[in-house]
Image (cartoon, rainbow, N blue to C red; front, top):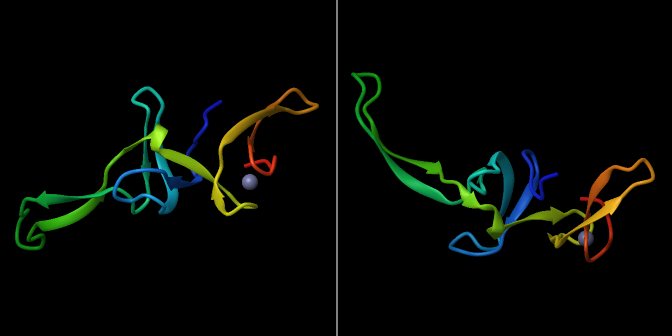
Length: 103
Ligand SMILES: [Zn+2]
């Protein structure tokens, strides 16, 4: 089970977007990276494509290494240090190390 998955709200732990949070749009476990909504934006130069699309500079999300991300704990309101707990049904669950709540 992944520490961070698609649809999670995560907090950035380092870099220029440190402390900001956003929703995970996509995760690439092999590359160890995730795309987070409106975070780690990079300017992207678009070539003009005919009269209706003049091109120009747009901002686009760039993948962030998973090690720089942590799930946001709704209870603490802080980045969760992820722990694991086995439920009675034998499922592995992700919990916040601080408050032991499921994240
Ligand atoms: Zn917590």
